[in-house]
Amino acid sequence: MKNLGKKIIGVFLIFVLLSGCNISLALDAEETKLNNEKNSNNEKIKEVEEEKNKVTEQKNQTVKEVAELDTQINDYESQISELDSQISDANTKIQDTTAKLNQAQKDYDNQQKMLEERVVALYEAGETKYLDVLLSSESVTDFISSYYVISEIAQCDVELLNEIDKKKNEIENAKKELEESKSKLTSARTNKQLVASKLEASKTEKQNKVSQLSQEEQNLQAKIDEIKKDNVAIDQAIIAHQAEVKRQLEELKKKQQEQSKKTNTSGSSATSGGATSGTSSSGFIHPVPAAYARVTTTWYYSSGAIHGAVDYGPAGINGQPVYAVADGVVSETHALSTSYGNYVIIAHTNGLYTLYAHGQAGSICVSQGQTVKQGQQIMRVGSTGNSSGPHLHFEVRTSPGTYNCRKNPLNYLP
Image 1 (tube, rainbow, N blue to C red):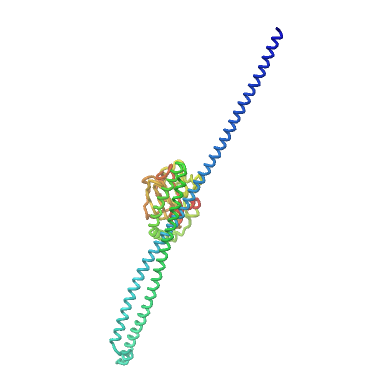
Image 2 (cartoon, rainbow, N blue to C red):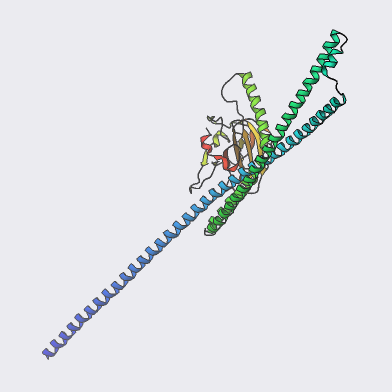
């Protein structure tokens, strides 16, 4: 009986040991399986991260390429604008030269007719010689008088012949100038067509790149394109008024020189409205009151993209006056529903242009062609056009004041 009990206990112990081993083996297998799954997941995470990084890198590259294409398009548009100017100059020269040629031909024909009439008169006079006229004089006084008349007639004949030769040369030179102008015009038109083709190719390539961007980035690009479209119209308006603005600036310079002689003083003139916290070496003040003269966005956006301006946007700036940074002539004022919104462009006597944008609706208080003084209020700070909040968008441009002539305003401000 005792032996049977021992056998039963022995079998039970063996069973327990075997069960423990199986459980241990099962647990080890489960742990191995979980670890394998974990490693597999980690590999998948790594692959996804790598894919994500590739997508981010591709997106950043695409954004960069779009920006580069924008720059390329700007360059092409600038070239086309310059070629348009050359074509306009060539057309003007052709018109002027044609008018000069027509006048020279008219003068030549008149003088030729006079010469022919003179020859006919001499022929009809027969064998009468100047000596016969002199010898037929009845007195010394009559002789001297006849001699003087004959000398004048001879001199007139010589001058007439010289003038005819001169007009002939003028006609030949005018014809040569006309041909040169026409040749330049043809060349400029050909170049414009080539550049325009490159421009269209760049625009198509850019559109393909933009389609790869996210919706948010596409919306931003659409805003950029909208601003560029407005800028083309603004540039055309600036160029159209260029001659008149230059004339007014010359008048303003003369007045400033006269005033300088009268006062015989140095330094900048007094400004109104407390606009300035100092005057820069360029003669500019800040375009907003001193308490708000804090730049919140510089030449570059935080993303690294070119802003092309500076923004004054500290808290409380909404409705604050905007001042002309220096004396000048108002080149443009417009109220747009897009891009710059309500804006003013001023041409200054130092050859620079300044642009003030996003002004409050109805706040512009100057007009095109008006002369303004440094520190004079031109509008109020607002948030019109493509604006995310009240601020003043301020640009500095070199002549002729177009979009591609923008310079970093921080180099010109106090």
